[in-house]
Image 1: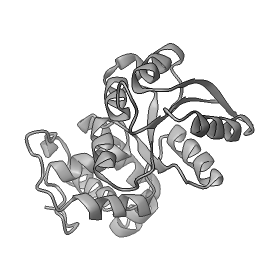
Image 2: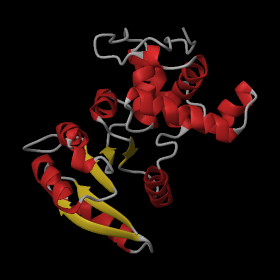
Image 3: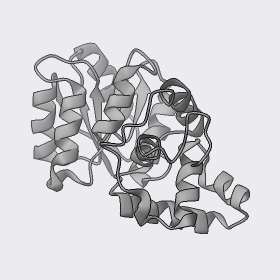
Length: 222
């Protein structure tokens, strides 16, 4: 059973998401919250697998709520998926920096929402390659924030290579084909890189790759 918390200040939006999720076998909505502060309390109380969190809310924004959830060791297993009306804007990048595992537009097709929940729960590619590529194109023109970047010296040459490829939006299968290795080996390298860098998931690995300067705006590994 996948346990989901809904955090959105629009009651109609919460009702729509709840109706969709409650109708799906294998998914349980554990509760709802109308602002970020209530959302953090809800997540701390129920420790769901997934928290669907709106970006802009009163009292506390979704980004700040995400930051607090990600910083709480007791909630290390909770994956936050941000909900936004605005597509790929400044909020999305800040949400990923705060610890979000990905994001969805509020007009996402129901089937895509259900699939996203399953993917995030499995801990696999938390941003689809197409979304990752679009995100990269939107934000990598800014200079890397090396002051906040993790130390990539802990990675082996292979791990740096797969991190760079993941940051370009490649799936494990595409990484395997590019490097002429098996998908399992590619997945292992990605997992080890995430562990060494302290990345909660693949989304944060992408952010780390760009903030460190490992990948440039043109998508080439340094």
